Amino acid sequence: MERESVPVGRLLGFHVSTDAEEFRVRFYRLGKELSFVAETGPYPGVPAAPPPHPDGVPEHASPAVDWNWPPYQYVVPDDWRPGIYLAQFVEEQRDFEAQSDVDERRDVERAERRARSVPLLDDAHIEGFEREFFVVRPRRAGATGARILYKKSTYTRHAYNRADRADVQRAASLYDNPVHRPAGPDGPCGHRLSLHRPGGVIDLAYWDAPFIAWLERGGYLVEYCTDLDLHEDPGLLSSYRLLLSVGHDEYWSAAMRDHVADFVRGGGNVAFLSANTCWWRVHPVDGNSAFVSDTDHHVGEEYPHLPATDQWWPAPPDGVGEPENALTGVSFRNGGMWPGEWPGDRPREGYRVQHADHWVYEGTGLRDGSDGGPADALGAGTPLIGYECDGAAFARDADGVAYATGVDGTPESFLILGIYLLDPVHEDFHHLKWGHWNCPVREAAITGPRAATMGLYTAGGTVFTAGTTDWPVVCGRELDAGVVRVTRNVLDRLSGAGPATPER
Image (cartoon, rainbow, N blue to C red; front, side, top):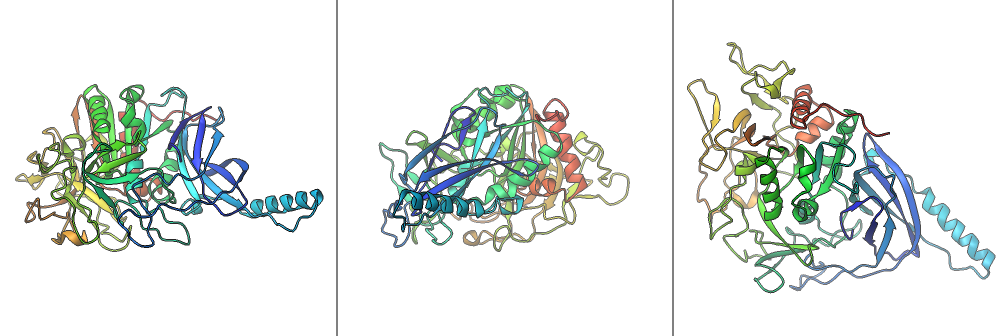
């Protein structure tokens, strides 16, 4: 996509390379279910080659530059509802035996029939290649009356996007054959990544789709934005009461963080239904069509720059010096991730409940052990904890109740409502397995217990954190009644009103 969000009535730009004679684009909206909304085209197909990798990595493309594929446009209709939309690209291959206008018309009709024979997508087929997503916004923020703004974590999506296609693994991303460049006129030192590259849909299907469906089933009126929208517009959040961060939200620009911090100080609320949140800083460049981030991802067999200076928590000059938990309450530094293929299997014990009389737990019936019985576990029996999770540095009082110490930057008012000790902790940085990885340049040894942590604090507005990437999956699929009720309590309280009636 030229840009991943577009207001209604404006041009949506997209870039396509195909060796088919023509292609069409089908548009769907994510809601209670994946709904087909329009088909456009045919457009003439034009093939284009991917740019070669600048470091000479054979059979892999460059993740650092605009791929400059042929451009196309579509005007987003005024009556499209705000939301996240899916574009499906459908090829049409015409026959070349036509010798007359009549034969040519027949060829066109056959091509159109073949395209139409491709079945429409449904909820089970959101993931895949020949797909892309984008956000549709109202002309004016908050115009629908929505109090909730859902931020799609697009920078993180781009960091992991390998620019593959169904039959070719190009392995070009921030993690696969990245491009690291010294500081210069086109940006600071770091790994360079273009947002104008092809890919497919993975994270949207896993985290966002089930949670968006749940929001709409519950009657929540929501508007949507991307990371770039939040980066560019300091006044965007002023039209809302609650910002949602959902799933995996790892990469943040300084402007994004500043705008959210200002929002909270001014009385706005945030629900981080996510983890590994705000772990790396990014610097948008090239008119915000690319970013640079000095991370510890290796290039070939080497780490080009250690320590990596765009990690938020370490003190300068080895990092940014602004611990992410000062905003979120928790950090991946005190959390961890699970081994195996993504998303992998995980423990199913859930969060040990604390402070069960808090409004977050209202209506759940969960107990915290203060009545003399055992404490309940939120999400027990589901893979709630992980695939990545964040935590706060903590200690325990005489009754065994965990509290945040604040030594890592977590606000003093942070209240731990649920905790799961990550045990055993794996010490191998390179394999990113049990528990938090410790870059040996920063911490030679594990510095304290690691625990997935759910909680909240108030500092002007209220910030709730789920402490795990898979909260929206468990809630969206309604795998645990307690998780669903806690989510409702958070959304209803922090949005300033109960569910609204959705537009018809």
